[in-house]
Image 1 (tube, rainbow, N blue to C red):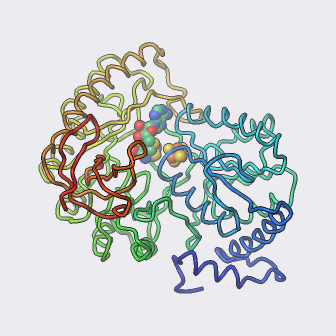
Image 2: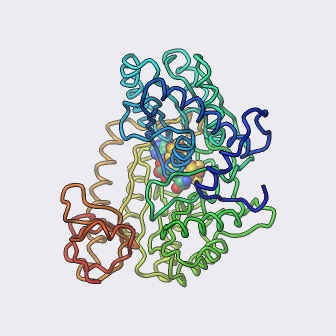
Image 3: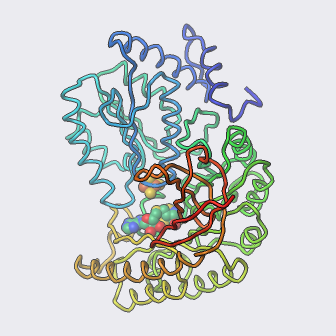
Length: 491
Ligand code: SAH
Ligand code: SF4
Ligand code: F3S
């Protein structure tokens, strides 16, 4: 199986077809999964012949782009197994790819499971699968076992590559199948993926996180940081480009520490330089950048690049040096502002966005005002603002001085007001200019309008037709309406 890394789906199909089900499943990956895909295909076919229609599947993704990419892998496997993807939950196999970064994310899943139960009562053959970050929390699995026994399959973030094998177990059993791993150092390449967009794609460059910010559950549910081999990343992107992709989003919880644990260490800036060379690739994005690891080398590479987009998501979390220390972020207000200054000097037209948490334990009014001060100094194009959510098992959950809800809400509203006022002003700064957009879709409300994305990540609506989807066009930015533009195509 050498030299077969990163195959197209049709090539994977051929390998699956060639699998011999009269033999035992191979031990090595991904061949073992190809065998189970073929096995599942047989079982799915039997059921669909009985029903006289194809079996359908539906995935809902909660959470971040990591999860979105994982869902594309699950859809790739589902389709190889013979399921037809449908857009609603009235399906034979419903999967929730869950998030647990904030309490709200969990509550949404429990709420919707109640609805799924009612659907399952009408269609007893329906299979329900739960995966993703929430499943990595033992207390969640306990609760599901006790009160949601109608769920068929539960697996975690470390073993999604085993999906085909788990589905076969589920199809052959009436019991709840649970397979959760605490952590892994394994990265399985060459699994099928079904992209949501033909022209752009997420690409994992690393998995897990080692930072242990004191409020954050991600390191516990996504495991230790591990980087993918640069050769695998480059080959995957080359393949994607051959398949019509012009924009990639490199994904990692902290892309700036990419490559540190590779056999031959490599920096993120070096990886970007290699990716830049890929012919036919037009745009490169990445997320997320941790301010503590953002190097001068990266700023230099971004400055000189023709393909890296003029956008940097640089999570602040808090503007108070005291709170930042309690958050274990390993930078302070001054260091963050200096970094922004350096970036803006090198790349004046860059757009900066951020994440901010309000109401971290012990946050005083003064601490909060420091955050507002940073927002006013940096002038973000936009910011995701979050109310602090207590995550069991993290150090912050047991810190003293948890902030009362009404105080947090008041601060949150004041921050939002500041962020939005500045965001509107910043977003409008290119009014009248002609800029390049990547056309992404037809506007859902007005069929004459197409929606494109600027390098700085803002959306532009302009008159056009669907033949433009996936193309780069020049558009004049006529009018900024808050956080998007209305424009005219000029070339
Ligand atoms: N790795 C990324 C963040 C991933 S989580 C980074 O370090 O930037 C996305 C965002 O969720 C974080 O930036 C943070 O602002 C927010 N977040 C994480 N844990 C949270 C919590 N317990 N309560 C509220 N917001 C949280
Ligand atoms: Fe969470 Fe911090 Fe890791 Fe981001 S860097 S995922 S906020 S622990
Ligand atoms: Fe949520 Fe997991 Fe992403 S907890 S934010 S889906 S890494």
